[in-house]
Length: 107
Image (cartoon, rainbow, N blue to C red; front, side, top):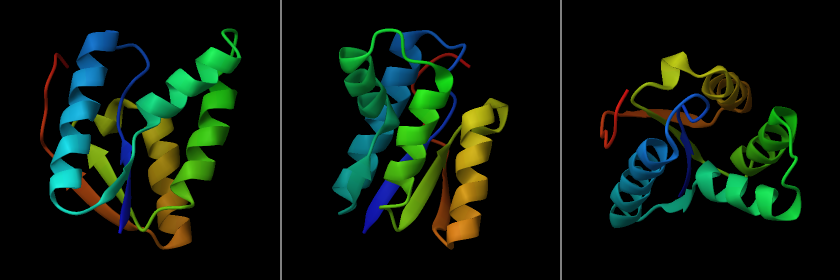
């Protein structure tokens, strides 16, 4: 089982979203999931291209989502354009959708 974490990143303080995604990653790993964390994907993209655009991140995120059996929508996902796109893609692909109200930062 492989889960993709989806939630609001843009417009938040880095420490807040990093904490939320790290807690979610730990939660799912403890449940036996292989976890895809888009925060880590973003870090890798920025190392290769510091001038990366929103579309660059979304392209890689959607590629990663396609490798997963589940998507976990983290608290606050409803305020994220990208998370809404990821949820729609998961629905289209038949990926199981889960909701996680495990929060670790400011909204």
